Image (cartoon, rainbow, N blue to C red; front, side, top):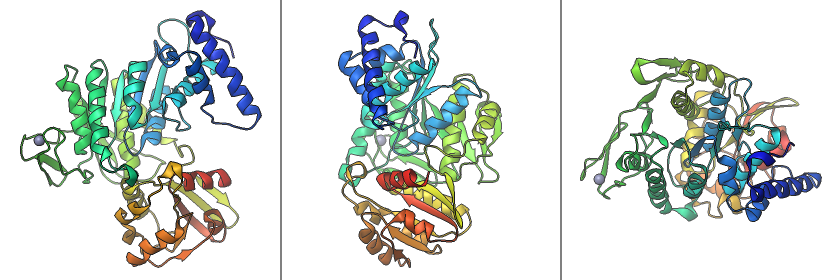
Length: 430
Ligand SMILES: [Zn+2]
């Protein structure tokens, strides 16, 4: 690595050197993907994230589901074939992880000298958006959706969305790209124009109802839904019209953009949720000067994101890896499974620290829709899952080990895991 002594203050330079030494040590003991570099750099210089981000065009992506995939898509759209964009592709989306990603980019020589330091596309945990935005002065903030994640945190989703709105209001220079169909997301996005910033760029998908908020984010009035439309019965806050609208199914997916432009999507990634993520990537690309047709072409080759959607060849067949960690994520995966041929499915559920200990969210997943698939329940909480499946009337068997269960199956199989279950399987299989 060429140390960027010239453009960083002494303290930040010391932070980068310290991070490099510690990261090197971590790698030597086999700890890849660690965020320790970012942590150490921040200890040495608590403003290091701001210094590393200075001069860059920063895009921040937040929301409950789809952050990693959408971030990867936007990085691909903005990077093109030869320009590598700084991004936290390993999904470490808290400040230490984002700092580490920028340090890694520096080590690669990704940041050039002068005022244009290149592009950084970062996914950010919803709870840290304010901190990261304050440090990085983003050019674009993407708000994907807000739904409850782990049941331990139920009730917090409205608070999270409100804080995101405050962050957006505090950064009027940032262009907000937000999902119009999600009540909480739209409420947070509208904070942009309310604070003197420009109106958000709205992404919409009127083919499907996705909102689940019954209370207005502005006045706490009741929100009524009619198809994809929603409107507060008290203050009149209503779903904004989409500037970028996704229509069609897997074969006919089209993104309708401003000025009557239409762009066909032909994604290798499956499912409606990914087509919607791609619509976001087209909208962000256009905001930063990439034509929609060029953006769509760049997305076609994307086949997996951090192991998600990856198909692994094994003796006797293939295993496709899918991640679903909450009811909204599961709704997306169920749509995706409905689109494809009927395959056996291994569902693996853990409840470790990173998953959330409470698994009662399983009762909010429409497992009834899996009835036509041969089903295997696995993971630390296979028994809880089995009870849920029994109530859903879905025949299944239990397996001790999710990956072993796929190996026992001939032909194509899908393995759907929540956070640690997915990563455990991905580590073994890929
Ligand atoms: Zn209202």
